Length: 223
Image 1 (cartoon, rainbow, N blue to C red):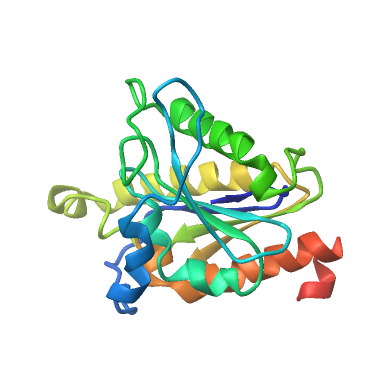
Image 2: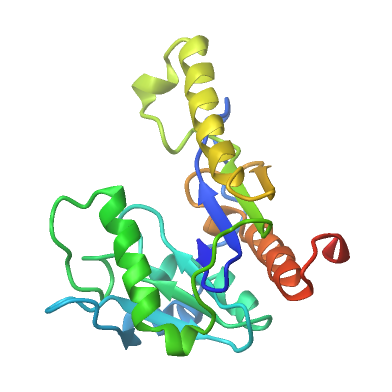
């Protein structure tokens, strides 16, 4: 999850010893209804139009990217809350939701390139532009549970394997946060791969902090 006006919130997954408990109800039919039709199809190449769903107003614009094989509806709980704060757009990845398929293989680089192209194509609606992270606030939310990521076989593996997996994931997320002088990694308890659905308030609160810092130009005024 990134913002078009150069602040960043990333959702990711890392190991933990216990399985997450889904403490939030699923999105209601009313919240899911806007995601049942295409909203804004932006042309990024011949025969390729990713779907964006934008609500709210203000700057910076928050762009919400779903996890692997996910789509804009994953933002059905968080997006309405963020829309009351600023402009927010959710996004269907290639071949998901209402977005046209993309060329294979669907590597991480291809997924990132698609998102950049979609944001650039819709820049008049999104506002802002690409800037280096520099001293901007970067918050990486790390899942506090591995239970919905590993198979039952993996869960029975030795403790040292889980510890190694946790260390690798943590180092990766720390490297993302380190791209900014004000980057920070935050572990969200009782969450797995779908932090925005399992612990939506944690995501909403963090977005609020990042948006405040972007507007104020300092993190201290938003604490």
